[in-house]
Each structure stands twice: as structure tokens, then as C-alpha cells.
Length: 293
Image 1 (tube, rainbow, N blue to C red):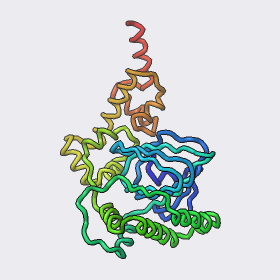
Image 2: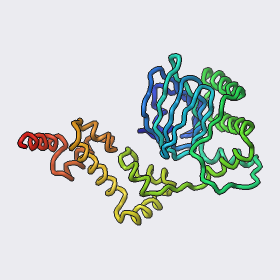
Image 3: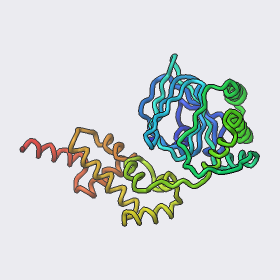
Image 4: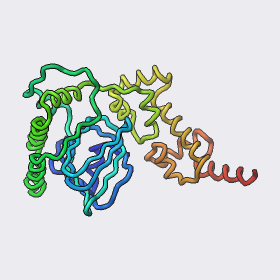
């Protein structure tokens, strides 16, 4: 699983067109199919699919299918599984990542008459629109091909995209959607943590993804569980590791990744502190016990 867009900057299949911190415009192109890639969107993202097909399953188990020349707008804080499917040999997509400050700049010039109290949908999708194709083509031609990577252009191009989408959508509905994205969005800690304790995330990431500051997250977590997040997550991950070892053969590295540890040595240390044996020793002892039976 990866945090988006942070982990994309080192991806060899991704080209950075414009970037300022985690606000950026990226181009991703691949020829091999990618299945079940996990990710958390940490900034709002608008994607324009150039070729291929994308299938996304969100945290709320909604399936989103995106086809060439369609545009998808996903708010920050969305967890998803995605399949990237090349068609005609390639998959290519443009990705626009931005934060609330750009939305607020856009909204300062928009007319909002009444704000809906409904929850923010997990995405907006726009069909094929010729003017957006022209926008994407000119962006690649001017900025990517000529390597004009000046930060000053980034904000302007994302604002231009928002105004283009606003001209396609119903103005009030789009402005209302954007405004609600800037409001704090809290998720139920118990539900979220039970589903995601085995993801390789830091406590800061869990706080952000549940719509809380780090201090508020720690306080709310302890009210639910009467234990610190670190201790609870460690116990849950090790519980899962032991359950996995009872049901299938698996390498230590695969086991560590499956329960949320990216540092294999640290996983082995934590496992040994809990069980009194390393994972390999535990697997061997369980195997011997099976033979005796």
C-alpha cells in the first residue's frame, strides 16, 4: 500500500510535470497491468485518463470504473484498491494533486448561495469533454515536453482545471462540493482501525485519515480502547500474524508485509518479544508439533 502522491515521486513510470511539495501534476504511463494496488489519497486528486481503463474500489466498497477521456475527482482521505488496465498496449493518466488552499482560492471567485449539510460523496466523475482533452494535450505539449517545471505555473494550471470543470458541472453543485471538501471530515475510529490496523501507516497517518489532529486522535483512541494506539496496533498485527501462521505456509517477509510491517527486522523483534521465538523458530516448532500428532 502507498500514500498518494508521496510514493509516486520515486516511481519510474511517473513523470513529474509540475510540483510544489505534495501539490503536483504527474503523468503515469505503463504497459503491464497492475491489479489490486492499495493506496491512500492524502491530497485531493483529479485524474484525466488518456488511455486504458481504471477500476477503483473505495473504502466504502464502491466500484468506480474510468474509461479514456473521462475525468475523476477524488477527495483526500480516500482509501482504495485500484486496477490499472492497459488497452491497445498502454495505460496513461494525468494526475492533479492539490490541497484546500487552492480550493479556497477558487471558491473566493465563485458564488455560493447555500451550503448543503449532506456528507461529501467519495468522488465526482465527468464524461468525455472535448475542452478537457485540449487542456490535457496542451499541458503535456507545453510543460512536460518542454520541461517547463516552474512552480508558479502549478497553481494556475490547477485553478484553470477547476474552472473548466465548473463550466461543465452545475456551478452551484460543484462549488458546494468543493466547499464541503474543506470541512473537517471525521471517521469513526473503531470502524476505521478495525479495517486498517494491518496497513503500513504511521500514527500520524491514521490521525489524518480519520480527520483528526495527532493529539485529538490519541485522546479519542484512548477513550475507545483504553490503550495507546501504538500498543493496540502492535497487538492486533501480531494477533493476525499468529492466525496466518496457523492457516498457511508463508515466508517471514511476506508475513511482515501482510500484517503492516515494512521493516522486517523490527517485525521479527516484536514477534519474538510477544511469542518468545522468532517467526522462523515458531514456524519450525509448530511444524514439529504437527508431526507428533
